[in-house]
Length: 354
Ligand SMILES: [Fe+2]
Image (cartoon, rainbow, N blue to C red; front, side, top):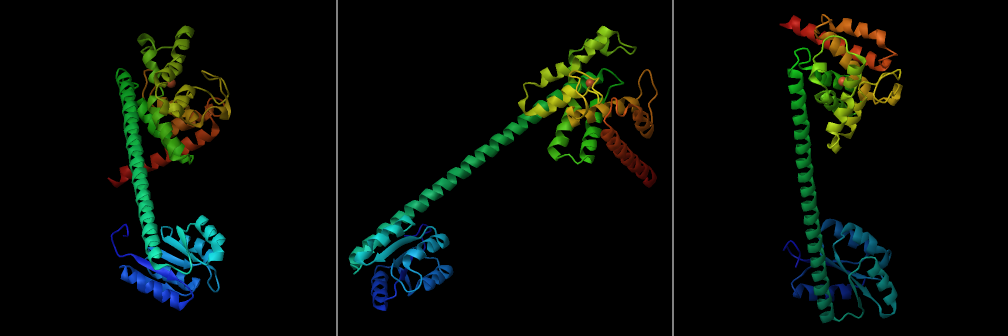
């Protein structure tokens, strides 16, 4: 009765040839396949070569004793049904073997009928154990599968919520020809700068998402101020500054976006500490927010605005040098310069290959 339904092979380990032969003969009569070994070393060798379902193991063996063998056997064949054979005066050793994983023990001289019943019992117990393990394994697989499904569902929901917010940003920008595509451009270039700085993939993606959503709070800004192309009054400027906090409020329910929300909040902080809303300075400003802040300036310089001609990428980077150490982190400027010149080199190659 092996769990797979295949033949049941028993291994008899005893140094006395007469006992080995008698037990083998009896077990073959009962329909088992039988292997024999005279020493512990031989027994381990048999285990390496054959699939063994049950073992009858003499405690007193020459060389390694049966007690010493139990852990080695259990390591090699953890599901084996192990029965110890022991002399009357050695019951303590047998009990020790049981603690180490043996199923049962029988006293010598062996009563063959008794042996047959003990083997049947041990095999049944082994069968139940294996079935239990299989059920456990199946349950674990099922639980893991459900968890994976839940994670996938959650990721889909998260993507949908971000996509919905992006659509909102696109709608907001579509009203203003000077802003159209701004957030998408800021997102892509910011992610490239983060990648250039060798940030982990997860952080690069958070920077990309924050780039797309950084100005979502402008939904809460009065339209006449948003569309105003002249200088803003102090009151108007204070109102515009609110967009970072409004953005955080809009995103707050999306708990998976915690990192992104921090970047949205801090994208108008300045390296010298004179930005808003928290007047953070230097490295206290999250790196992604420093990147988005710098890239936003770059995007403003390289797109046409009512009050300015658009600048060439290299010129914009050069102009931004004036802001290094005040508004912009020098490391970010350096990275932006490298990414922009690489992009320009690709554009040049592309133009000349056509
Ligand atoms: Fe902004």
